[in-house]
Image (cartoon, rainbow, N blue to C red; front, side, top):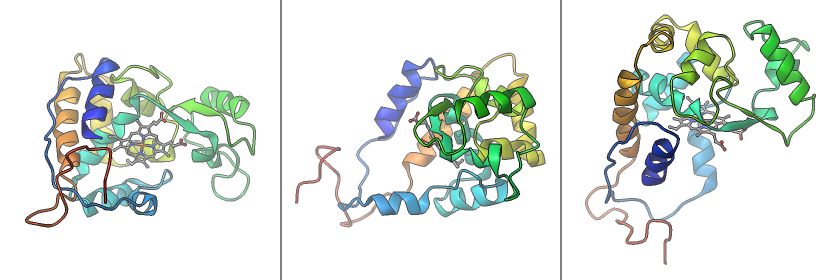
Length: 203
Ligand code: HEM
């Protein structure tokens, strides 16, 4: 997965970075485990930071890795509460840019579960600073992305990257944090195994 992510980042014009290989892994994979540790799409900075901390990832890792949302899409149910039921009173998230919200409402009528929208409307298919520009312009798709503007430290990083004249700092930060993420839950000693074929566990 670390290698596939590295290549996806590079194919979309992001940084080229090396990843660590040969980690000892557990030999059971359950999809419930993955869901249990995924941060919620409506999490605020405190909640997101806690989910990252459980995996030994820092606040900065959280702010930097969130920008993986510079590529890819989300399904309407991941964000449509921001359009139709933000506080439970049938209202809209007031922090959403009005024109952007109108466009999302057209693309995701209430109850639509199948459609997708780009996470980074500025440049959906390019790994660049567009994510931070989207967040800064109140055009972040997920509430968890918009939340970065609501905390002074993460907001400062968003602003710095929005106005950056080069992508170099973001690219370097992203590579460091991806390597940190690749170290989550590495087994030691005789625990688990180093997979000979990464994608397959043969009992
Ligand atoms: C900060 C906490 C995070 C939250 C709350 C979050 C949440 C989400 C959600 C809700 C989606 C859309 C799912 C759907 O509706 O189909 C998504 C997509 C995505 N996320 Fe995250 N995510 C987070 C962090 C990350 C990190 C750390 C990475 C990688 C380093 C990442 C990479 C992606 C990518 C590439 C997609 C698009 C997938 C596609 O196009 O099919 N996310 N994320």
